[in-house]
Length: 91
Image (cartoon, rainbow, N blue to C red):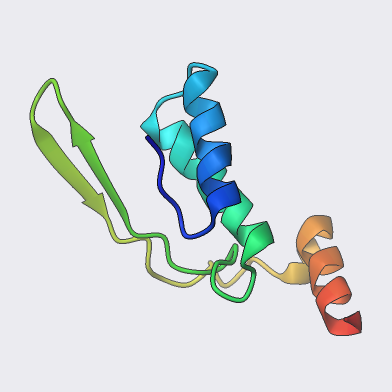
């Protein structure tokens, strides 16, 4: 089972699970899909709350995923980010 804020993101996550990926792989796939499908809600620089459950140890790990990009990372340093920003500005 895979659940996400958009049915296509859930489908992407489920496809990863069917291909042999684990829950973290599926979550990453859903997150990437949501970044494309709902860019106004989910973005590369957004928050990423994560909760992982390890069945073998019955332990839950949480990662807040909150914070800022390092001060030395600039959009102009990354071709992907700078081209995405350019496309957003021209839209």
